[in-house]
Image (cartoon, rainbow, N blue to C red; front, side):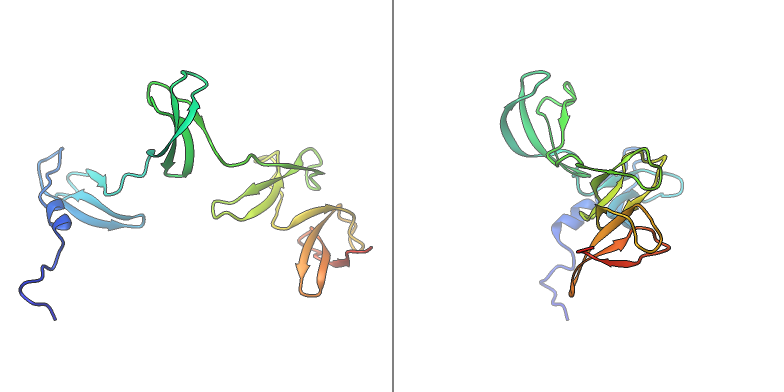
Length: 186
């Protein structure tokens, strides 16, 4: 139940309704897509202008006390579409970029599928660790658990996975057709 004194919409939402489209001068209306709300032209099929509501591409989070290796200007920590990154404060004049995330580490275990690459630790876009061949996209071998050098006792596949179970640590064959468990002591 609403009273006459309480507004149905906030002043921010009402202010958005009065913006005009830069292409055709029609009113911009709030629309909702799979990536969230955005502003779109009211004459939509004829005019395809859209404008994002939130700007998250490269806004400065913190000034850093380090000079840029290319132009000697100060570096800044920015929040971008794909996470945090370090960039030059004079962008776009200087295009220096660095990522604060650690680089993928090699396990020095040969890939059992292509026998040319090595397995490296990677991180999915959701933050979960997995191990994949460094010859990607030629070799698409990947496993979710930590690889261990060894040979399966049942099928002879050249890689085992370390599985942490309630009963203790077990080794499992990395071949998806076999998946046989072996004791960690053997």
